[in-house]
Length: 286
Image (cartoon, rainbow, N blue to C red; front, side, top):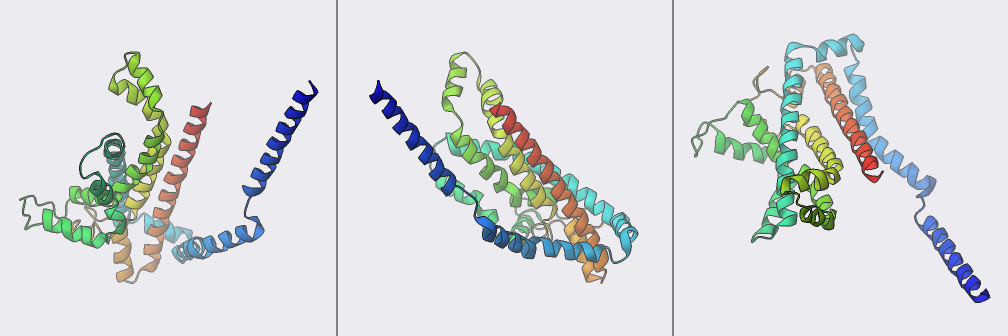
């Protein structure tokens, strides 16, 4: 009996010492690390944002509101938000399908497809606009002229935002419990039911995160739409093009005001989706 007690005590001591080592190793980086991180974020993110906000308030809050509410500015913002939301939703569907194929299917050229998905990360976006203009412009080799149309803007944004949902969903899909899917199939559930009841709940946080990143990238995009979109005021002009035009005509206050509006929209969307993803994860764990 005493031997059993001694063994139990030794085991408990090992567990406690292991927990202590784990806490020590997994602790924070300390005040120096926090200070460096805060300083870096301040220099790279907070100071530029503060400068833009200060510039937008040169004419006071009323001037900021008037600049955002100008007819051309309002049209550019509404069009940008609308097309970015559509692009994000399309990416959720198509990106999930692509991630599913890459994870669940084996086929020749899979590595090539994986590299192709990451191409928009490395390719200068102005190159994408040139390619799209060559393909869907007035001299289109496929006889499809989308120059200076809203679908052209959407296609350009779909190109640059393609990787976000795919790369967000792919690692989660690789970790989904296949045994739960097999158990559901053995009980007679169809493929759609298995996906909706077993797989999709695990993917929701990743889908929300990927959609938020795609939306945030789309509302600030400039290079990929600058040629193919045409930049027609109140038609195909996105907010970034409007900002560039305001700077060209020496109206930096208006450019800064619209920039602040884009920042607020992007931050609000990312924050809401992050909160929704966190609540979904807690619900799944509970």
